[in-house]
Structures are given as C-alpha cells and as structure tokens.
Length: 172
Image (cartoon, rainbow, N blue to C red; front, side, top):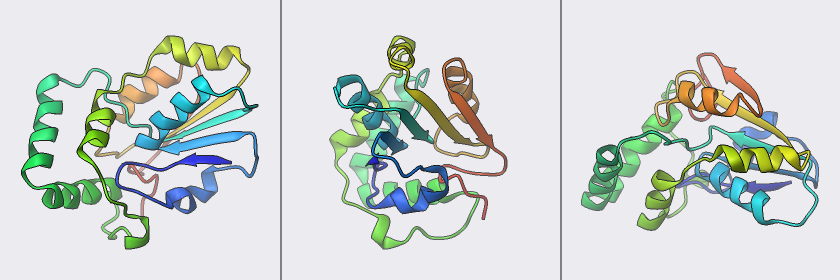
C-alpha cells in the first residue's frame, strides 16, 4: 500500500492500521496526506483499486479570514501553533502524540493544506476509473468540519462516520 502522512506527521500509517488493507493496489492518506493521495491517484498510471481517505483535510467553504488567521499564528510561533494543533488532533483523547510520529513542518505545507479544494469532478474521475473510495471521519473532529466532509464525500464514496472519534479516529 502507498500511504501519505498527515501534516506534521511521519510513520503514522501504523496509527490507522485497523482502517487499512494490505494491498499493493491501495492508496491511503491521513488528513493532509489524504489530499496528497488524491493528487497521486489523479496523476498515476499505476493500477489502483482502492483509495482510503482518513480524516481528509477538508477546508472547502472555510473563510479566507480563517485561513489567514491559521497562517498568522503559525508564522507568529510555530511551536505554540503545533502544540495546539496536536492537542486538537488527538481530541477527544488527552494522550500526547508519540514523538516518533511527529515530523518537521514547513509553512508552505500548511498553506497548501488550507488552500486545497476538493473537487467533485476529480472524485467522479476516480470513480469512473472503478476505484473504490472509502472515507473515514470522526464525529468529534476538532480539525475539520466532519459533517461538511461527510456531505461532500458521501455522494461518491463509502463514508464511515465514527461516533465519539476525533481526527485520529480514536475515542480513547
């Protein structure tokens, strides 16, 4: 399986083991990595049977002021921003994210993540290739609007809306 990590993450594939399949024809991504997985699928000529999107970073409809505010606080104090970010990612759990999953982050990655637009035409192109799309969303996600993401993806994909789960799809 080809896996794309989330913003500020590395080696996070093992966090989502229970949602992934062991197949060389599957592509998956978590959050920002879901955006990267989508772009990979749109460009690759390799065989792909399944696309798995784990808490896709979905900011369609977010205001420009929200995005500017995120960038402002990131530029102001990257470490403080990331501390709050990881706290929100792990919610509703109060567990700290293991250091082995944390990677260095760049400002352009946050900008790309916030500005990415999920397009229905692209989803349709993937479905037309007979690629199965599965989307996993946490009901209590503090990073994205899971309800808006569910409304968007459920037209073309099998969506799993996990009760009491956050961005990491956990409730513990």
